[in-house]
Amino acid sequence: MKILKSGFLLTLLLLFGCKQKQNVKDSVVLKIDAIEMTTEQFSVALANHLKHLDAFVVKDTKYIEKTKQTIINDFIVRSISELWAQEQGLFVKTSEINQEIDRVRANYGDDISFREELAKEQITLKEWRKKIRDQLLQEKILQKLREDIVPPTEKELKTYYQTNKETFSYSESVKLRQIVLKSQSDANMVMKKLRRGSSMDELSKYSVTPDSENKGHLGWIEKGVTKYFDKVFNTRVGSFAPIVQSEYGFHIIQVLGKRNAGVYPYESVKDKIVRTLMEKREQAKYVAWLDAQFRKIKFYKNDEIINKISVVTKGST
Image 1 (tube, rainbow, N blue to C red):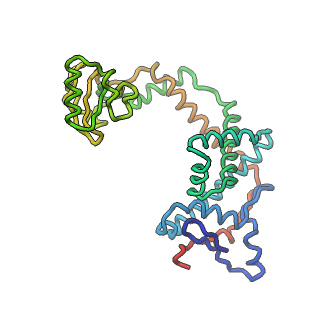
Image 2: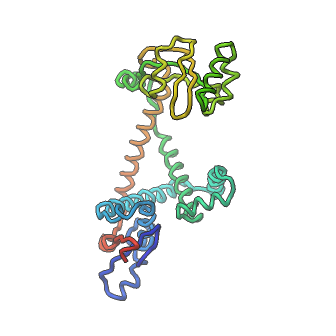
Image 3: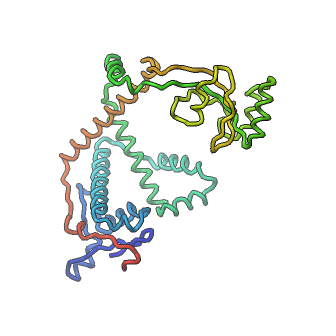
């Protein structure tokens, strides 16, 4: 059996009798309860995982075996999710799928552009709808699991802050705004206008960088992050630094503030700590749930057939 995907032929090496060869593509290779995956479906899944890779990678047998295991793991998670969702009465409505599809489609100019993107990814609209549906079901499952998660206490939050203070530290920083021009002469002209009393608010519209929409405000920039901004750290607050050239153009930079290296106060990072700890608890909850569900199921895997699925490039056949 051969499946063409993005320049590769996925070939099932059959070491069976003729009659068995005819039926092998429909043979079940993975099964959990009533949910099955056939040889052909497994091969298509393997092709989809490899379609964007070069021939050198797909010839690596270790990589192929690793990819096969990924497909098996995905099947287990997807099947467990389906069965548990049914038990809990969790379902994805067609209207929810359509709403998500419309949201994604809105990022494209028109329906033709959207379908061209699907074609480029070598996925049909039907396949993509199923992926959307699976993602939405996972979100519903995670939302259900979150119901039992207890938020961290104030003591736990403060303990985390004290234990991980280096995470909330910052280097010496300057608060900046800028105007970026394409040429040195343009930058010199704008700088003269600023020194004669014109405002940054007024002249920032000439900037060629996106921050012009925010009147050139960049916020706080830490030392060592951007090489050309490091040159302005010796400039006094309220003053303009000498014009700096970068790959983006010629920068007129005003220093609005300075602060020494330090640690953000607890209250300013509290919400971030809450999110971090909740994410950790959600991950732990999900892993424990998945392990518990896996212990309940009866999982069938046909290693004999799966091991006979190999990959060759088009030029090798």
